[in-house]
Image (cartoon, rainbow, N blue to C red; front, side, top):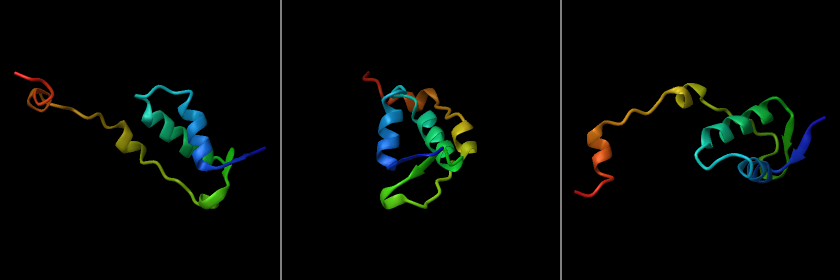
Length: 74
C-alpha cells in the first residue's frame, strides 16, 4: 500500500530523522521511495519522476591543502 503525501512533507519527515550532513542519504531515500512506488506524490509534482545520479554521489570530492587553506586565517 502506497503512502500519499506531498514532496515537501516527505522531505520534511525524512529530514527530521537524518543528520544535517546526510543530504545524499536523504536524496537517495526520497528517489527510491518515489521510484519504487512506496510513496506517491500529491500536489503540484503528482506524476513526475525523480532521477538520482548515483555515480555522482559515489565520487568522493578530494580537496588539496591549498583549497582548504582559504578557510583558515594566517
